[in-house]
Image (cartoon, rainbow, N blue to C red):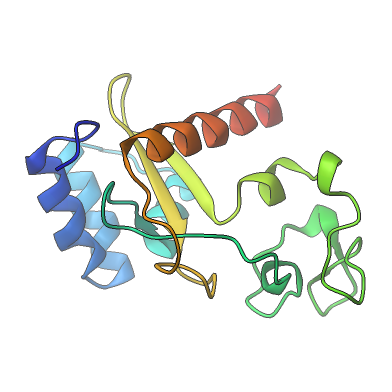
Length: 158
């Protein structure tokens, strides 16, 4: 049982993770009384699954799959050509700019949405091949990942 999210919210997130992407947007809007869902928020609701503390699993294996452009997840600022591959990626799938990665790369496959001043939710991309594998995201890891994603977003917005 999570101490970070209420049982009611966890049940809602579990149910919403199981519906179609467009219905997920509607579910979040209805649940939180969102009259205007921004494009960015809608894309997170549609393309990511809510992280359920104590249940969702993730451990990065450093495979470079997310940098390959295979799932076209990279923003234009770091892609090269029409293949969608990261312009920094080496042939051995190791990031050569790991210490100075752009915010998007540094937080992927996680993203967060601040619904209101109190409710902040962490999401994970299901396009990552290691989504729901590896180490369980417990309450402590959830808060750490949420803080990291939030910090990276604030830095980007400056």
